[in-house]
Length: 293
Ligand code: PAF
Image 1 (cartoon, rainbow, N blue to C red):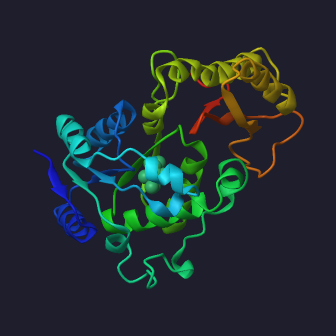
Image 2: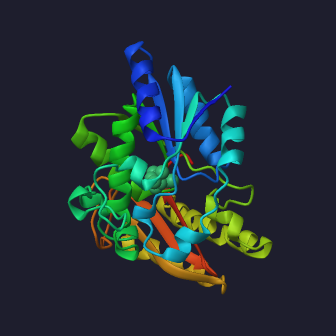
């Protein structure tokens, strides 16, 4: 039976006891609305550690749009049941005040001096489209790492740039080991996301265009095309065929040499990244070109 805690201080005490007993902790930070993608991270955390622990917290610090924060799906009871079903050891949640008891101002906002620098991987793409997003992610993940003290922390590759930001953060802290897990997809290719629930059935089908666009870039890469502009054009051509999709970006980056702006000319390694909207639902996806996925 899963242990459910509603307070970060109680979670901190539980994790400390587990660590003191010599047990390893695999940690999966989430914002809830759990789906098969999250559960695969928890299963991996359980397979590789003595205990698996999950946080469920819709972090206000990382939302640049109030509407996105307000509409973010929340059902803690359902999340707890799903986690119990896969054998998760402990799940915890909390409030902003519970996570940052001494760092909020009188209005309940985090004082700016406690915001954590997300580092250079936050530049461009998501960092450019979503003002303050990665500061919010780095700040809460840093605090979650303080609370849990995990041996390993598990993140999905779907949030590719986030995985670079938290990898840098963990490297600066000296722990934990960050494990980036493959993207879980719906049968027609759409990357699993809590936001998919807000798509109409028609848009959910149409949204498969994003993985087709990434597939087109991957096909061109495998055929020998290394030119960043040409690969990006391949994606945009496919995406332009879907009139309901409002493109924000379809670009390439060298994953080992992240740049704010899209590189030009030939690439030695490449990740293709796409973001855009169906109606008011924002979706992101990516593919490391030439990878097995
Ligand atoms: O990927 C997410 O769900 C969130 O960005 C995270 C890592 C839980 C931080 O709030």
